[in-house]
Length: 290
Length: 189
Image (tube, rainbow over all chains, first blue to last red; front, side, top):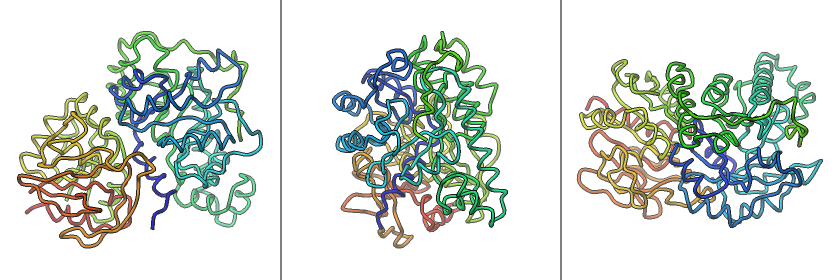
């Protein structure tokens, strides 16, 4: 009766209402866990630095990932390149809890994503709209996150992607049943996934916000737009007081509609990540892997 | 009947849906003032990340209130992370949260996500039920007033102590409502 996909989807259910933080060292991982992160993403460089450094960006050193696995008891995730199933096999071999097939790294395959149904370890993938999300789910992803624009500290793209996805979902729920066949064709996804969204008004897996979240207010915004939890990448360890900011974002996600509390949480957080506006960036990572 | 569900983080919606199916009214507890906003007959502590929930209970100033509520006899049901929060001792962690139940828990007892599994097993007072274990703990031992209700592969996975029920598995992730019915049956006795 064991069904890996069910178990992997269920693991994502346990992460809901939580904050997943990018970390590059065991020390940062401990700060994140202590601040209340429900998982950490082990990375050699956070997206802002990947963006600054340029060049080809690859899976992290397994030794560095293992160091983080040893440092904390919460879930540890790691990224592999889009389509790089060998990197994913390596991450599975070191018993990572979740693999992020991520547009933050340089894509290894410009046509195919990884066939995630061949893996026992769960995958999270980025999406800009419902079509991308359902294509990734069809390939075996058991969790979805918005792409946003990583490493910018600018939340505009995460907002755009979440709004697009939610509006796509709302539209499907109001379609007549005989219209769903054509919707499946337009979205380039199997009919049964379209039917699921039509009937349930949500994705069949958990949906988090990611890309550009830098403040408790950003986190609250994404939760109110329909995210079930939040990834914070560069926003924490590129800010003045990472521990305090991390803790504030964790609380803001739990009580995302309580503006009074979030006002208190937003006090004296020190300098936020400087960031860059979307008009100023050269490389749109969100355009990788559709 | 009205059940409060601790909604700080994790899979709380699933419990709310399950209780809805059984005709129980529910409401969410997200901060301290919610604990005193209305009366209720029981409390559910859901699955999720126990370190996060423990941290938020502390940061939001709720740990003592929840502990006192349980000690004063309010029926409580903890699943997975909830079991860890209730445990008086944790074999592989020093972070004790509520510490109201005479059990010694082991966190992430089955290893990482590759160790997650589903099975069916007998639970005393309930029958044979499907059990889903997600990066689950188990109970090393029960003592004092706690009684083991289910074992899988020689490890205790469910226990009860008077008004407290704890399972290492997630009945809220299955379609089987009997464990929740058992919990509702603990109310008013």
